[in-house]
Image 1 (cartoon, one colour):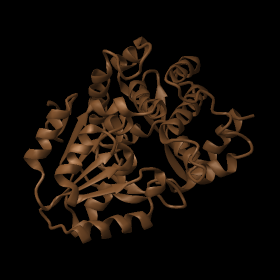
Image 2 (image 1 turned 135 degrees about the horizontal axis):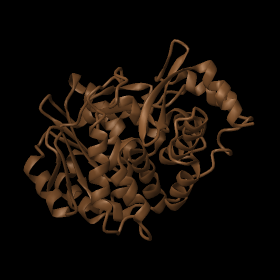
Image 3 (image 1 turned 180 degrees about the vertical axis):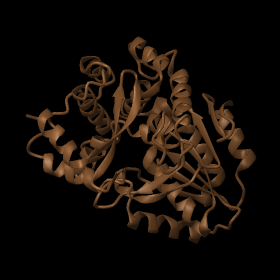
Image 4 (image 1 turned 90 degrees about the vertical axis):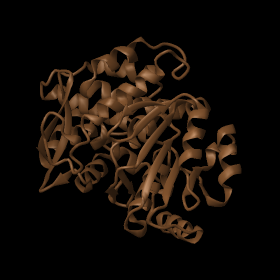
Length: 353
């Protein structure tokens, strides 16, 4: 396996045997494995189930599992199987499985170790990196959670071959985000790719560059620093994206990556309005279109729902004292702009005339 980051024990491979060797060398009798139901058909997962079936919990992944009810159900299930402070939770799945499992690990017995095996592109490049765990509230996304770094992250790009096209596109939304905030090499690769988004010569480089970009920003857990590598900059596309996603959670017709794409479009428009000279809106629209992501924010951010959008932003964890830290793009770099919610609403109304 290739080491992406030694300090955070982040490894990558494109070999199922590498992953099996790691698991067989590390899993103990008192560990617990949490599997996304959608991957049970995969050959490597069938092998894992055969060996560790008495220590496995299966969950059908979606944003709907990130609730207090499902959290309670999971931790009671883990406690029933039996764990101690030396136990490790191994989670196999996308972002929702990782968020829920990580939050459970951070609270069980006041904290047990967590190893993440992300199986979606979005989880490989984003949600498995940096230690954010959490569940949703009826008020908004990820408002209940903890900062809890996993003991290790094992990225096996072979899992990507099993994903539906829409899930691949959602992962590319976060990758595009990294390219825009601070990685020209990644942007060049994204513009170069044609055809198959996974079975190409660049996928492992894309994962590597995305993870390395995120690592630059994750030293400050609580996003209090507003400097060049503030963790807050990773929220580009997420201020309006989370609002759009929260409004559509019950319907389930907007996935996280799609919401981030919508948020990036709108936040680029704000960057233009403030004369920060970001990537052109047309270039971003073409890039999003290429990766089968939403390239028009108007159906999601408009006069009909603007009050609901702003209400979600007001209740977001990035907002405080009638202000919010909005992430914008200045030329080819992400920056933090502290802006009053009143001014943000005024700008938003101007853009949706």
